[in-house]
Length: 297
Image (tube, rainbow, N blue to C red):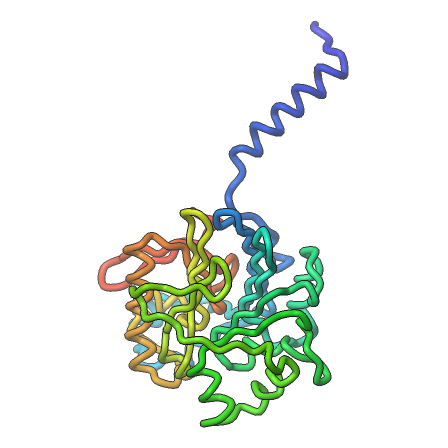
């Protein structure tokens, strides 16, 4: 029998640890905590689940019994509401904020070592309550040092044309820190609003619904907001919209265009209503698309 001293054993254990870490998956997290982490180039991406509950296929428009039977499991499915925290070498960027219920998103941000006042920018996909709810509390800005970015069209519609009082109240504490922009058309030249983050028009769900392309080095992530509500059905049959879509025909056309863009350009996507880990790859599948979650790639 050969005996090794403690120093040799420790060295071998360290070497083995380094070998194992080299083969660690790109994404990791704990589904019970509702946090999934991955890398996009030098950026650390954290998907944060605010809530998860039983889904309702009744929100789908034009989905017949055959479609539901084919894609919805007999035991039902889950509906989720997510936000994304992205740490870059210089900034902390939050994409959407959840409803604000229970302070869940704020607590998860803190758990990741970021205080609300250390958020540099909040990018809003659209002004529905489950996307801007954490912006303010008791009339005060939660992310006091952040600029809040949203599309000019969305801002005009919900604060002037068809006023959403909740949205107006959420934005009010930020004053001149609210920055509006014109998102680029899909496939056209992009313009960054903060380094590494470019907005793209994805109208239909709301008049100014915007998705964000995140780029670091050669890696890209497309945060698609509310492009999908029941992903199990809308990936394979993108023509099916949801009752939440203000212009259901436009939403369906946008959904196909964006998913086709992600496939052709091999871009990972992440969504606010795609269940954990909420990020993954998209491939063409017959007349529709197939989504492969990041932790199963």
